[in-house]
Length: 181
Image (tube, rainbow, N blue to C red):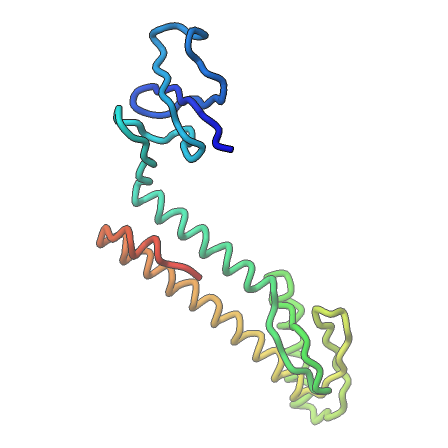
């Protein structure tokens, strides 16, 4: 069933929508036009047809940067898939709040390795909450991989932001809209 809508037009833009016929219900100075269900408040009306307002390119760039920041945060929060020394696939936590723990494990592992310790004395808690006992070289490998993962995610974010900057400088709306994580 198609619902008939009416849009109140103010200065060429939709200011209000209703599904109740406004005829005879409002002051004659108010402009009401028939509309379909796709019309939204803020849409433009030229006397014949409705259209969406064009977002200023600077606002689009700001929105795209925020989208990239959110995607970076989500990638770091999701963690790094890693095959543990026992062959189990798990996820190493790479959120910003996990970084001091990983750094501490890496420093300790290097100190133990340099002291000649070879047993699996260090423990890593993965995202699954499972504990993995590791030798110093194994711990160094996993913490180095986590560091590389974070660097890769940051580099990806910076590359997308460079694309946003270039598209904005070129006033290329299509290129700007096409940028995704």
